[in-house]
Image 1 (cartoon, rainbow, N blue to C red):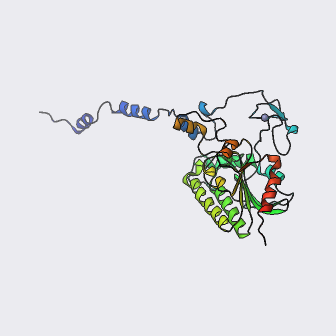
Image 2: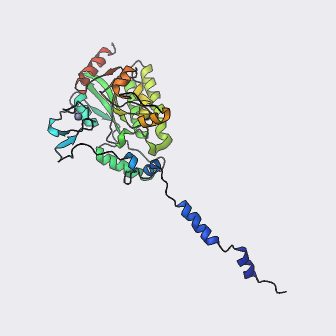
Image 3: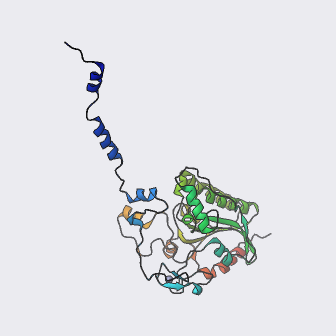
Length: 320
Ligand SMILES: [Zn+2]
């Protein structure tokens, strides 16, 4: 009997259909994920946003740079008709403001002195393209992070102030936002100053993972020390204030003021609706609804805000 040679044995051991099986596995792995959430996570810059976050186009088209469209009434508004308070002349909608615009209508002229302007975020999680996202946000907003802090006077009353900016990654709270607000509270505590925080935020910044969630506890701790020193903390909630910011310092103010019709909540309405499987009441999560349910102390129109803040600061002035 003739014995098979070594090569013949090897050929018998290797299954003939091995290659096609491997290719099939590869094809299976390459199968596209269909979740719109995962699609969005893979394209955070919005290059290939899935259909579920595309907004419906409504109202007339914007003819040129002299016009803006109010997202509430959908009317075109001539830019020159908008005053420094940035309120829609048709429906009274409060447009979002930049920190510079907010300082102009809140602080006494020339009194604002900025703190920690140079702080800029690192990329603690190695999130893809995060540095690019930050760079774009810095160019778009003209500031280095989503909050501006400092001190100023309001009708002669000295106060610390922190103003979040929705134009910078939707005011999301990352490590630098948390750090700047914490330092503002610490400085205010040391200098025995009251503090006013203008909030606007989509919540914690997902690109910084757990580090962003830790800011909730860090800021809350600084707020508590400021409170222990017997100092006043006023929150001014502007549209929209959601997620981790609502769940921490936005709701810790001694006095909580909100601008009219601002969205104030933790989870989004769609998530809540899907969880409880019920229709939500009219005006749910808006300032007026939150005032009725005890989350907000007072709703103040933007044009009256400076005067009312000055009165509150004056009333709570420490007697020397
Ligand atoms: Zn309007």
